[in-house]
Image 1 (cartoon, rainbow, N blue to C red):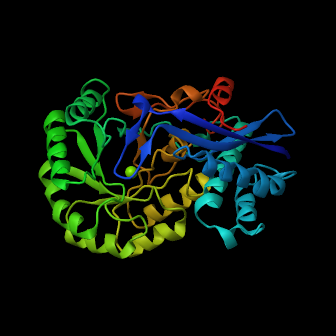
Image 2: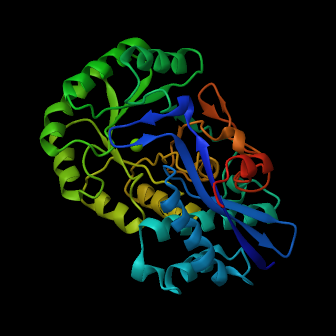
Length: 371
Ligand code: MG
């Protein structure tokens, strides 16, 4: 099988309620810059990364996919993923200008498309190709009920509804208000609203400084918070290591890291308790797998970020023994031929061959912003 074309796409899909905010971002659309990889067979692979829908930045991603990686892929066998991954990393040479950021996110999109083709060629869902078992139940935790810009009453109602009506056993809420005392009041209200049993995670999106984290982090324990996510700046290994020693609540991070080397630094510094790689950022399924192996090696749970809108990652989470759960944000379910689905807080097993990344023709047309 040979690759015959790499065609870009760029979608901007509206988010729930028109707009959401955490401590550092306001998002109205989820960006999906990616590509269709065509072959000399009927098989087509779909891969993409996830962004906050900045058109200029997203065009850099599609440009990197098609102009840098595209020519290197033509004529290659798309099933030779490990070799192609190394080729794209070293031949342009990408590592000279990247290893993170645009080039790594573009590589992630290509990697997802290649795994999609490989699984389609095997006529199996990707989790099966990766060695997973249909017996593994993957829990979903809901983040779409916990945004920072929601008034406290709505925040509590949304979280309670996810638990009581939708069957989620875990929800995540954002913190990072200008007054952290307000954050504590909101966490207390959500805990009261959902009751003592559901797990509650808290995410600062790298907003806090060390003083704030040291003062307010320990107080989250009053509300039985499962983890504190990205309390400090994304790359602050020593800061997170210090914090991990000072407070009892486990630290979770990784959605803003790009590769195994970055994760290894945090792990070796004992600066993280739960790894949150994002396949659409950290090198696709290939990169995610390496990071999950790291988690296995150091006995750390792996709970991927939602960045690919869960579609390909659910397959890796089913298949890799270190992966324990997967975040859930349902913004793009209507865009896929086989969207992920949840039953009583657990992901249903994908059944179609491939990585579940195939987009519908309607979505490709309706949400395209490529001129
Ligand atoms: Mg987060």
